[in-house]
Image (tube, rainbow, N blue to C red; front, side, top):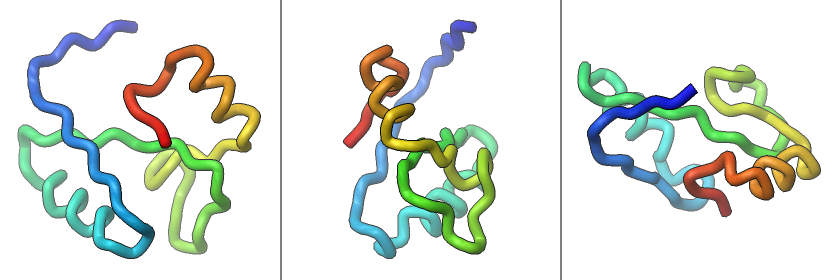
Length: 75
């Protein structure tokens, strides 16, 4: 499926606990602001839900997605 929308992509990157989630929650309240859900290889925290906060996957699956060019950005 191809999604073609005009807009600006903003990537938030900072150390854990710096406030990325808080900022994203504030921005997502705007009607013209869409939030993507990131993939991570870490284990979920007690308050996080699969597919809502992150897609939690193992390192092998993460590397495969990188090889298949499935990410716009990764670190």
